[in-house]
Amino acid sequence: MPRISHGVVMIAALLATGCSSGIGAASSAPSPRASAVSPVASRPSPSPSLSPSARPSGSLAERTLAAMSLRDKVAQLFTIVVWGQKVGAASKENEARYGVATPAQVVEKFRPGGVILFDWAGNVSGASQVAALTTGLREAAARSGEAPLLIGVDQENGLVSRLKSLVTKFPGASEIGETGRTANARDVARATGEELRDLGISLDFAPVADVNINPRNPVIGPRAYGSDPGKVAAMVGAAVDGFHAAGVASVAKHFPGHGDTSVDSHTGLPVITHSKTQWRKLDAPPFRAAIAHDVDAIMSAHVVMPKLDPSGDPATLSHRILTGLLREELGFDGVISTDALDMAGVRKKYGDAEVAVRAVLAGADMLLMPPNLPKAYDAVLGAVKSGRISERRIDESVLRILRLKDKRGVFGPIRTDPGALRSAAHRKVAERVFAAVR
Image (cartoon, rainbow, N blue to C red):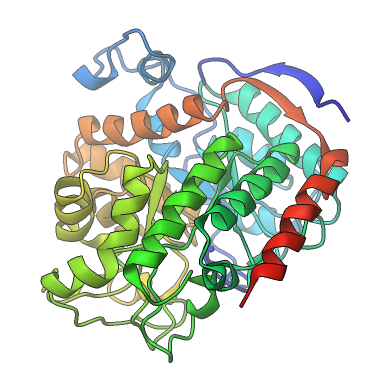
């Protein structure tokens, strides 16, 4: 079936319990109403004095950044959940959390950088429905801001499969790892990515790059390719290649490594006592491989590694880990995404407003699923206005996000093809890999 073009061209314009990497539902407690704070929606004129990194130049991402106001740049950092199956359908959850009723109104009011889809948020009931929802959300973003909307999902396959009722059933990571063939990781990722693109989804929060060396691990387990760092690294690199072959952005997670934990970071704060030498040997290889394969984004873990950072802060809020290790030692210059900010592991020490600010200061670019978007947005904006965070620092993050969107075609026409899901070719890939599991 040919792709359906919806005729909208985007112009200079995204895990677990409530977690982009997880299994379950988001916190049931509604955040304070968005109407209590100043929304992003009233568009001020772009700042007349742009920071040097925001000055116009040749690339689409840089030109888009230069046209954005400070408020819109801060909004671009956030990837959020919207409730409902239809872009124009009212939801009490949206009303309680954002002060407006429909998914389209949420996007138009706050102009976030991205939206992540979840079955528990009522976003997934059928292939045509999801395609219509993603199209409507991107059209809402095109009406309201300079930057297009990045739509993502957790589709790891296996245990974490947000679209399992719609897409081809593929083996999970541990099963793929058991086959011993990196081609299987690549082929499954490519087929998964092609089905996501047919639904209008441009980013998958996969692959899991953790090395599952703790048999008591309650949150990773079969989501990892295995317990051998070298073998996991080879699988992760191949999966990244597969997603890219499909034209979909990939996210390696959870840095600096969530494989040796016995506590679930959704409900507590895990502590891993690996020395830096052990980390380089056990945890780092899959992330090095992902970077070598040009992974689009890397997601942080809400874990404490006291021998990497003695502050007691989780990696998501650690400058030593996100900037010192990931940026400087491993040389990663793509998008750093936090894991979901509504998880207990990142909320133990600081309030929800301060968590968002500290994540940016640590080096994060994408702030995923803040439990209270208005509070987190106002906190980051206030930190920039006070000088605690420089506008140059915001520009760096937004430019990375815009470059990712440009690279993966998000600025281009909106096209979906929900009828192409579960194709014979994809079913054949699934059958072959399942048959190869030892």
